[in-house]
Length: 310
Ligand code: GFB
Image (cartoon, rainbow, N blue to C red; front, side, top):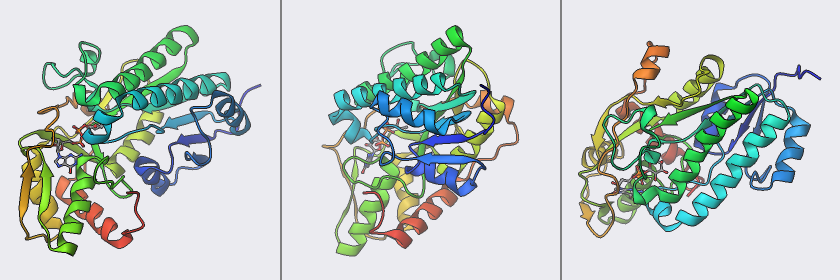
């Protein structure tokens, strides 16, 4: 029986990227958050996919964290993410999903790798120890998508964003990513008149992509990208953590004391990624400048605090 309802299903819909896709309001879309369905439970997953009968899926659900959470929860992050991904892709295949987009991230590339990171180097060595469990679980997502294409012709594709940030991020100070953690810590330092503590040396470099850009690229890829190999979503602009701290402090009007906590990890020094495949397929895409993205995120945080995910 062909599936005429053309429903797009978004998993992990209550997270940062899911919220950005909701803001774009694509038609015929069903949004599932963790509260709606535990994707780690295959029977429930299969049942709900059978009820919704999506023809397209954007698979965002994942158990994630920043360098802190990833280092501590290596086993749990591997176990949970493998189950979520294997179940989601199999349930999608069983109900005849025509197109499925999953996401990895640039932290899963080999720690020792030619720069800039290129999609072809994905499996050429172990990831940085700070991302061990999560990175291998995410790499299996790419393996499963490719294996399903080979055996069953599934058009399951994979996007690889760099560090995503924006409204409705996870602002937990211990487990969150660097951008939301810095925003939350500066807010508290201003409020309490205390020092603002930055982890590590401030020397590492990162690339950031604003979440609304990823939402636009997700819908674009769903309609236009159909290669077996993954596609990196990056502006290619690196920034040091120290310079990032300066931009966040400026956006927050913070003039207090900034201290660098050398007892905290620097993690991978840099992970510059190659955006040439995206430039080839989508040459006129314009990424949000980091200053604008930070200001939008700070404005959202200040307007919603304390009702933010933290
Ligand atoms: O976003 P993040 O935690 O993870 O960034 P990764 C870590 C970098 O930011 C390190 C510095 O160099 C930290 O020393 N940093 C400074 C801080 N202050 C803070 C702070 O308050 N909190 C945090 N978290 N970092 C991520 C992966 O790796 O890459 C994710 O953990 C995802 O799973 C993402 O894949 C793309 O950038 O090192």
